[in-house]
Image 1 (tube, chains in turn red, cyan):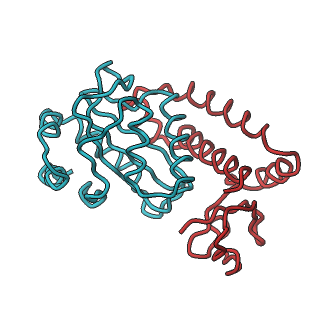
Image 2 (cartoon, rainbow over the protein chains, first blue to last red):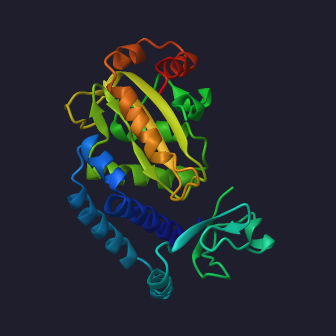
Amino acid sequence: MHPQLETLLEIQDLKTQRRELQETASERAMQEEVFNLGADQAIVQLDEKIAEMEDTLPTLTRNRYNRIASRYERVMVPVIGGTCYGCFVSVPTALSSDADRNNEVRACQNCGRFLYLID
Amino acid sequence: MELREFFTEDGINLDLKGETKDEILKELIALLGLDDKSEGILYKMLKRRENLGSTGIGKGIAIPHCRSLVVNRLRVAFGRKPAGVEFKAIDDQPVHNFFLIIAPPLEVSNQYLPVLGKIAQFSKEADVASRLEKLHSPNEFLGLLQEKGV
C-alpha cells in the first residue's frame, strides 16, 4: 500500500471515530456508560492525533486533501464492487481490478475523493 | 438479529497465546483473515482506541472495537486467554475473554452499535464469565450465544 494512502486511511478512520463520538448520541452513551470513556476528552485527543497526521502529508497531497475536506465530510472512501462509496458512481474497470491497487494514491474521477479499493 | 449470526468457528480461539495486551490484539485481528496491511492498520486503530481508554469492561471481559475502511462488512471474533492478561480493565482485574468487533464506516444495515450493545449485555450476565471459562470448543461458544438468545 502506498504510504500516503495508509496515512489518509488512518486519518479517515480517526475522523470516523471522532464523528461518532461527537454526533451519534447512542455511540457516545455507549462509550461513556459501558466503557467509562470520557467522550469530550477523547475527542480532544483524536483532534490532536488527526492534526498531527495531517501535518505529515506532503504539500501536494495535503492541499488536495484540504480541498476535498472543504467539500465533503469523508475525504477517503472505499471502492466496493467497482463503485465509489462517496458518490456511488462506477470507477473505471481497469482501476478497480488493478492487481497493484492501493499502491498508488488515486481519486474518484467524479467526486475527487481519495479511493481505497477493497474486495 | 442475534449475535450467533455474526460468529463463525474460524473466528474463535479458546487458547490465545499472547502474554501482553498488544499480542492479544494481534491474535484477535488474525482471526479475521485479512491481509497483512489491513491487519497492521487495524492494529494501529485498536491501539489508538485503547489509548483513549481501555475496552476492558470488567468481569474478565474486554471488547476491543473500532470502525475502519479496511473491512466492507461487520466482522467479529472471540478469543479466550485462560490465564488472563493485564488489560487496564475498569475493575483492574486481568482479562480472560475478548470480543473483537470491526465495522466499516458506513453500514447499510447499521449493525455495529446493536452488536456492541448485545455483547456488552451478554458479558454482564451473571453466569457468562464462568460459562466462558468452561468452554471446550468453538461450537460450545456458539451454543452459549444461542442459548442466551442475545
